[in-house]
Length: 134
Image (cartoon, rainbow, N blue to C red; front, side, top):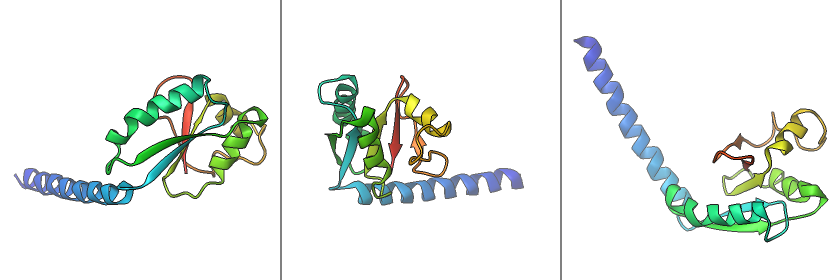
């Protein structure tokens, strides 16, 4: 019986704390702009997928921020990737990259981008691409 009581108290605390974090996230993103950097030219696959994501993503982020797509092409995608890597780690920058970029960094083929110690890398959707949030 004591275990059930403790479990109920723990569940209540989780719900209360979870609501608090949701409110904090709503306050943080409300009225802000999130930028998706696409390191390729406009009109291509990654640009199209980034713009599609920008249309639907706001309703899944607390506070419904404005989301814009910024194309930073050049250097085989490295100009945009470096720009996102050097962006302020404030949660307002996403990078839409092919998953091969992550492997190149992990294998040491890209010397100025360090995935293990750099910005958090998280897959947002399942297909051959990834996002980095910074």
